[in-house]
Image (cartoon, each protein chain N blue to C red):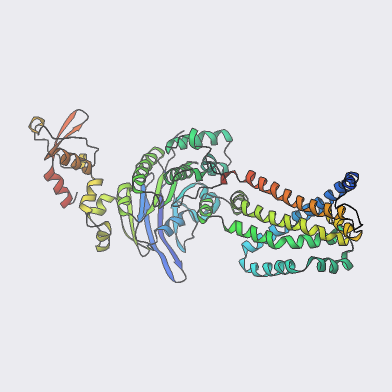
Amino acid sequence: MTEGEPLIRWDWIAGHLDELAFRLGQHLELTFIAVGVGLVIAFGLSLLVLRSPRLEAPVTWITGTLYTIPSLALFALLVPITGLSVVTAEIGLVSYTLLILIRNIVRGIRGVPADVREAAVGMGYAPRQLLWRIEIPLALAVIIAGVRLATISTIGLVTVTALIGQGGFGFLILIGIQRFFSTELIAGAVLSVALAIGADALLVLLQRRLTPWARPA
Amino acid sequence: MPAARGATVEFRDVTKRYADQVAVDALSFTVPAGKICILVGPSGSGKTTSLKMVNRLIEPTSGAILIDGQDVLRDDPVLLRRRIGYVIQQVGLFPHQTIADNVATVPRLLGWPADRIAARVTELLALVGLDPERYARRYPAQLSGGERQRAGVARALAAEPPVMLMDEPFGAVDPIVRGRLQQELLRIQQAQGTTVLFVTHDVDEAIRLGDRVAIMRDGKLVQFAPPGELLAHPADEFVSRFVGAESGLKRLEVLTVGGADIDPSVGREKADTNAPLLAPAMTLRQALALMIQRDARLGVVLDGDRYLGVLTLAKIGNMIRTDA
């Protein structure tokens, strides 16, 4: 950091709004794709686990192992194969969402009360109708809780992908460190934290909206 | 809307065998259309298993169950269940749907038009004593236990099923509410003409509600009879112990003044001034209660305005002691 330089130079921020907007878009895009693709894969695997419980142990083991790989190491391993690309970033980001999402989808659907399920089957719900009209709606609160966790952790991990040429706000942090420029570094850090908090708040609102029955009268 | 017609339900040599035990053993009986049949017995007697074989939540090992002569095993189970009402003890209302949506469940599965569903929901909520204005848009969590059970009955009746299965439906509500729900079930069942199979472990409930009572023990049918006959002629030791020491008093609930030995030879003017007025449709229990209240030894039986005779305490006593 240069002597006499203030911690934050607001004029730099005012002059780089375009750059900040671009990084916001990139951060959101990487997060959306990761959570979206993660949700689709997790959903499929969850249905398999629910149908044949003996798959639960291997699925948990694989997604658990993926989760424990340090992110930097995972990206480093992928770069020789998929390059410094969005694909590399997303493979890592999606992998990290699976454990949380599968756990919550499976737990949510298993948590549907037995009497509700029995009544539904006893009145003539076909298996697919039972899943979409009864089990998933009732599991929604738990599923969205998983999506919140996955989203927050993904927003954090996106900053690491700056090292493979992506990064969203993480790119600002990386450049700020390289140039000893505190304004850019702090802007990147504060904005990524704010994005995580904002996304979480939006998901809470979404959950309240989608589960009106859980509200007190 | 015309009342739904009940269907005959016949169990023909139905057996359910699990690896290590026989849950239901060669069960045969027939419930006539529009009647209430109560399956009663201690836990593990096979009554719930028998009930669930009707809508194929459990598949029988052998035998046949016929609804209006059609074997349920030939039907697609999902389509079969949409034609059979089903009520369970925990009710199983869908927590994420309003009461109106819950009641509309089977009509929606059957693809009724929206206006017909709306009309039926309103009609049914009124039928079970839940004001549609107040309750239609509420969620199950906002209802009391008794109200939820009413909603469960409305939901089971929505598509006018010829048969309704009820698995200890009133087991989880307090005795006062239970008594009221039982009365209303009888009223509703008569209005709709539905055939009801009803599982309970409470023999008093069986006697109060049943047109027929099937007493089960260890998967076998011990006795199948109208409640009056069950109390008068228990098939064996087990039945007489099961219906209890007070079977004589219980019989008073199922016998009516009209069916009692009324003495027409005594003139009305001879009766005590404190003698209560009795109607032929009253149960003997109600008649007895009135006589005891008034400290009278007899009651005056009137059919509308017509004098039928007197019913004495001694005659009621005879009916408890001897067979009807």
